[in-house]
Length: 325
Image 1 (cartoon, rainbow, N blue to C red):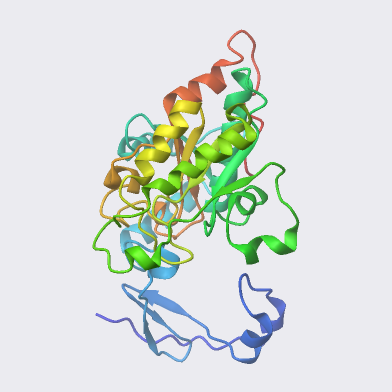
Image 2 (image 1 turned 30 degrees about the vertical axis):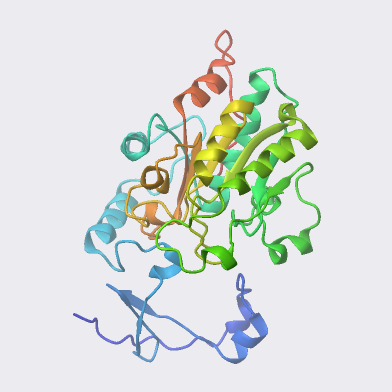
């Protein structure tokens, strides 16, 4: 059943808002506004129904206006709206971390929460650097992404990201970042059903970067297991498996950015589960809250958590100087 048309009117102060990833001058002259949503539909201020064919930004996995979600937000805000996040905790945060870890593959059951997918990516990159440093491998500072990859808009994310327009204005980014080739092979895989047959060899470019830079300088490789921001690019058969094998052989951490693919988007809790390849960390956001409140997370292998937190086993103190307010 569709909801009643909205009675909200277009605002008169459009110039006050600097909109993200938007042609602001065009938008202010030709505004497109959404006032409310229910189920699969948005409504404009004039009451026109708009089918939400992309589930927001691939994030409203359960549909708009779900009463159980609305009630949960309302109840929690009434119980505790905010508490300091450093050195103090709320019981439900630990409960959620345990439940989230329970649906992650293998032993990726140590959870670090953030406010967005961008923050989750930067968190995972920093955890990778911290992990190698406490293991006495501080030379491992290089971070490897992939052409056409999107990993948010933090400086870490745009450094390993491979979308030119997101990078060119902001300088070189993190020093030492490098990129694998993308997997889009239109000529040979244009009419693939399921995973493309051709392209597993593209993972061997990581061996080339190892030969160029030295494995002892590379901390982590981050890829979207199924790319989504520059076209939905399904990984070729054997590609992720080969990437996993190369990372393991050289002691490089493998991070899957599942901000889009997580929480049922590809038919399983994660693309790692669906495709049968387990990384060392998974970044999450979007569907984790149905986009109803800002949240991201990093799921880490237990060994990574134990290594970083165990580095100060003989002394009290903060193990990872990182977090979001």
